[in-house]
Amino acid sequence: MNKKFLIYGAGIFAVAAILTTSCKKGQDQQQGDQAPELATLEVVEESTTLETAYPATLHGKNDVEIRPQISGFLTKVHVREGQQVNAGQVLFTIDQVSLQAALDAAEASVKVAQANVNVARTQANNDKILLDKNIISPSAYQTSADQLNAAQAQLAQAQAQVVSARKNLSYSVVTAPTSGVVGTIDYKEGALVSPSTLLTIISNNGDMEAYFSMNEKEVLALTNNGQRTLNEALAALPPVSLMLANGEMYAQKGKIISLSGVLNQSTGSAEVKASFPNTNGMLRSGSTGQVLIPTMAPSSIIIPQKATFEVQDMKFCYVLGDSSKVHSTPVTVTNTGDGKSYIVTSGLKPGDVIVTEGVGITVKDGMVIKPKKQ
Image (cartoon, rainbow, N blue to C red; front, side, top):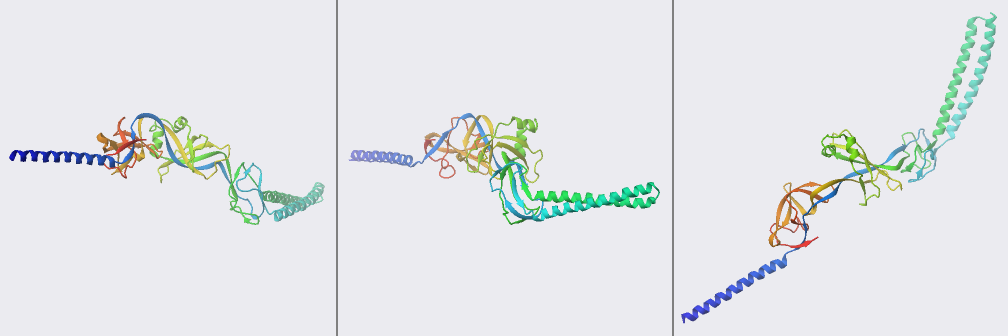
């Protein structure tokens, strides 16, 4: 009886052990089935070219404000916005009626003044003859000579008025001082304009200049902490690229041509200027974009920014360990400036596998995942 009981009890324990093992395996299998499938990336060490982006504003090589030099009503607008014009081409005409009348009056004054000079000169010549014959006194001759001088002065004044009137009349025809593209035209025919009125801007956009800023640290790095001059640093820079406002890359490369030697005290930055050819006239003054400066990164570990998360100013990423379990690892990085990648200086080594999907959202330390290669 006792022996049967022992056999029966042993059977029960055996069955319980089998059931327990089966449940555990089932739970492990269920946990594995529920593990999220996330993208991973194997870390490698490679040489690459990185691009640092700087927000920039484009300006024509020579943007000229067109303002009238006289006041009056616009009688004719000869160009349209966006039109390509040549130097000397007529842009606007201002009312010429009063200006022409002023010129006519000035020319008439010259004729009167010339006649007065002729009369005064004849009188002075006659008085000189009489003086030589002692018929009149020197003072009498001096009076006629002074009258001649006064008449000549009035003639010179009248002639100056003619020059001024003719110049004012010429100012009524506003021409392009340089070749370029016509900007916005806010004043139409019939509008009253004056020397303070901005009629339009002519942008000489054969070459476009992109203006952007570098901070003090970037300027120091550019010159190797002052070990070389700015001119030497600029000459050594490679061609730069331009990303347009729509995210597309401009087809032609540019060159950095200048860097301000004075830092802006309010921003702590220096103004940099890059020049881009604009043979097809696609670039317009006032447009925005990003200047991309390439730099070589030899033997570097580069990871996407989306693979990191930040805790108390420290950056971490999830490294895949045994049994597909991830653990957070602190890393030290430098920003490449392209807004997409980091250069890792410590914390990772070639061969490590990191998670690049769901970081900071679904991934937790110690989580089991299904790795998915990118």
